[in-house]
Length: 176
Image (cartoon, rainbow, N blue to C red):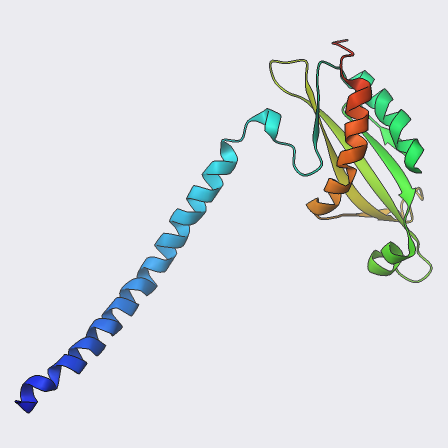
């Protein structure tokens, strides 16, 4: 066999491998951008009635007053006190346990868990979406010293069962 013909084949393979790596390195950002666009476009097509995040619940044929009243009846049964309210939200506080004090607190500064329940009407219906947002609060109730930190969305899922009870009590109340 001719040695001159045998040598170029491995050299040719190495050259092709190098060229394909350079091409794939240039294509990576483009592929990543296309993948992100595909994933994000799915988020933009979610119906309002199905949104709200982890722990959110839909209240059928109701109104904000009935939902707030139901929340103020349900949450105290689980050790929460009402810490504030507005036209479209209400907040509840509960002293945290020792683990929460270790995770988020500091020495001598007990933590409070605050759940803010937001009420949003689903357009074109008498249905409302209630969504929890959970915070850990240092120095709760002390004006000027209170410090709250939002917890990750998974914590919101803990309040789905409570919000289902709120929904059961407030559903069917009808519009104002």
